[in-house]
Picture 1 (cartoon, rainbow, N blue to C red):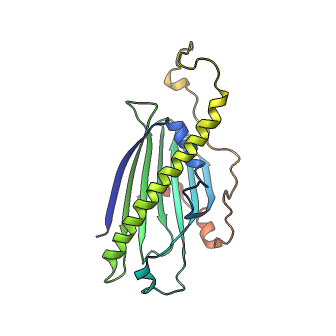
Picture 2 (cartoon, one colour; picture 1 turned 120 degrees about the horizontal axis):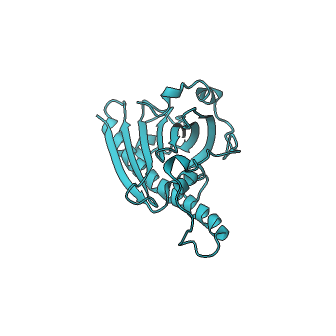
Picture 3 (cartoon, rainbow, N blue to C red; picture 1 turned 30 degrees about the vertical axis):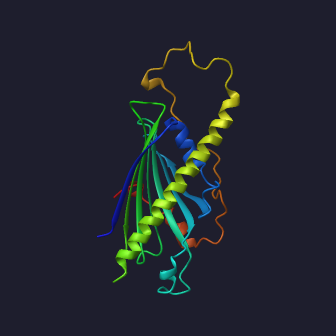
Length: 232
């Protein structure tokens, strides 16, 4: 049946800063298990949605008991696809990630929703779900329990990495603020006149060095259909 995980976190930063931190969170002191990060596909749709597909390479260290069961030549790297949709009209970022290899051993599918907290616009709500399953006969339960524990540990690191990126962004913004920022003489713009956040520009195709990634995996990003992103 697999294992299911869900959580809800309230981040004390506005959505546009969390969005910027999401794109800039690697590398960080807590992401030692993330080896590479590559943008495979990116498009701004006519409806002003930013669609992205990224390929990440992560370490795949097995527990001691599993190393005695599974072949020694089993790859220690796991390739993870991340689809995302940014909607600046609703201030939401939706992501879906899943592993491409080791699917028989274990499959982990994660879905996240970052959205502006309507009751507190200076906060962001993060809702996270994950499904963990294994198809190894006789060992599915312990593998899924291990996968759940590993997922929780990695997500704790991911949150610390996001907070690190947020603090870096906020530190860069602070020197540009002068005078009393608590009072504004300008009237707020109506919703249809508010400037929309721009998608990231001048992003390199590989921000952490994607050497050694099989070309068949890179090709996945170029043949994706738009409706497949963050679906299902």
